[in-house]
Length: 408
Image 1 (cartoon, rainbow, N blue to C red):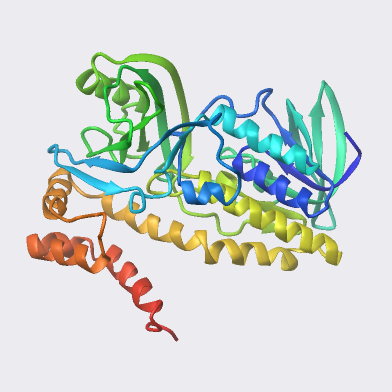
Image 2 (cartoon, rainbow, N blue to C red; image 1 turned 90 degrees about the vertical axis):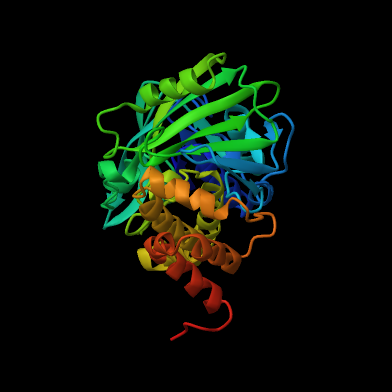
């Protein structure tokens, strides 16, 4: 470990590792630090990711791909099942990973690119001089170190302290946090080519239960619910109830719990000498909770902007604005759409969810066009369509903006 690096990345999850790899490949000296003694553990993720988006960052490897799925089954409260193809099912459907192995592979990729990787190294604060972040205070092997850098990239997850130390408000209200629990279960008896999502306030208030196949007869069985809508019920208790009713023969092998930001992004993700990526920037999908794809995309952008800023000798907030602009114009738009979906669907009663499922059960989602979906809903239930108007208004604006309409 040196006393100075071009870039220090705090957190060795997907966002941090991709940021470190990108910066190192640009010729920068990079230190990647992880507070845990084992990268990738404990797993706090359903482990699903889009094939296409993953392949933009790392070559798929059978060592960390547990299963490859071709779609998703969405089960309404009344049992109606809507089947969606992989392309339409979201950025969490494609590969189901072994995150312990996958995260280590990403960190190994960073090391191969030239980054120095430290585990069991805890950042305790930032070095800030003249309102610019210029390094970190680091506890490593029982000793405190002052490590300087031109840029610090905060990738320290939902509990991020790096942003707060730099004066960025990363506070999360209970209504902005999905509290999650997950079991690794043997004997699930599901089709291993599909992910399963159970919706409804009875099974998962303001959230859903997921089943992600992991090969053989294994699956991740998990739940996420909004902290302010639980009614005092713990996510792990609701998940246990679901298991007893739906998978009574299943055998629980592992148990994990955690939280996912469902707030949409923080107001800003940069300061002079600093960028935030991944869950630290609240870049996870606020509806599904999925964050791997967005985290890797944001990490790559941060690494590229870091290289450009350091080459210019300017790491000011104004210079780093390029990172802010790039991610908000790409993944930020998807996050905004998902926030509308979340606010719409998580406020629907089970009767409305059943009505929605009934309305679209005959629609082919393999060949679905947005207008076809709206037409199907309007034909079946005009009242329901009206309740979904915020979502459809946003979608229509996007659709016609691409054709040159709604431009100022």
